[in-house]
Figure 1 (cartoon, one colour):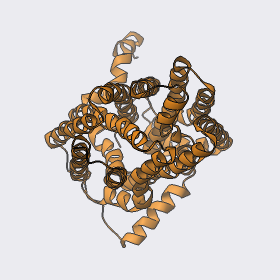
Figure 2: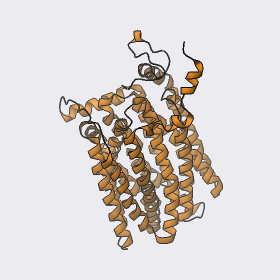
Figure 3: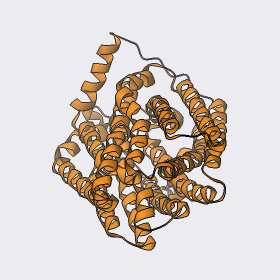
Figure 4: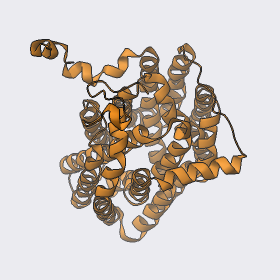
Length: 446
């Protein structure tokens, strides 16, 4: 008979559970490099928004720049997802991160030399969007190669989200101070230099060579196969459709923050930086909460609840007239948004077939970031007509409506994912007779 006290002794602590993906060396390298690079990315994001608004004073042009930076992801997602399934993801990331570094350095040169014009920003934003269209599906699919064990995948995704939002907490605050002190150009320069860390991490990895997928049929057939798989399986279809709606109507509030800060809160770049930092704090809290979960099982129920919280935070933000209330409500909205996004990512990556992971994550990126350009244009146009606060209010209402629609399909979704969770040993009930592993405490490595 098993000694209960021995089971208690061997039960991992909360800290060990939270940080279990760090036992994998390649993941530690990836996490460290990305942590530095993402701070630079957020610095550039805030500096670019402020630069465009300072040069033009136009909410519509903020939307145009947002459109240019994301439209390649929407247009190229099926092809770039196929590339992530077919080619070496590690090499793809080395190329994309190098090109992103060059984009930041060119932007820094134009600003620091006083030559920058709005059309430069639009073109360079479109170039970065092209780079990201290859980078995002490859990076999302690459995570499974870093953690080795599929039961650690959810933890790795949540830690990635924590890293992203810790950078979101630090980057905008640093950017606000730098913009005030020395201008936007220094933010772009530091972002360019930050890519050295992630490239060093990528070159230091010791990866097991991934077995190449046997190719049958032409490119069109494989694209069609990826589309049919993604939208033919109800859980992935519903999650991606909700993400697309949220990205189109909800996440555009970020584009409007310079307008909201200047016209409603009567603040400057420091106010924008600290407000975005508060947004990062709420998002980081959500990501750390998810990182402490043992598995993906049950996360599908959190998706509509998180969507409602996101929408409620935006609605409250739209009525705020003070920095303190705005900081609280943007943190609340971000908490809900990251809960929804990270939960969605974890569920999709858990249930997807490995040989189609790149194509599915490309459609995920298409929904998550590819719809953002249309949302940016829509938000910029709407804000120019009715103002930023009312536009943010409508975004919140749309987020809640989407969450309600998803909730109405939750029963079907749970029914479809249950056999997969059973097979992976993520929920009780698997047995040898059912063709599963029968391991409940420790899921198979698959």
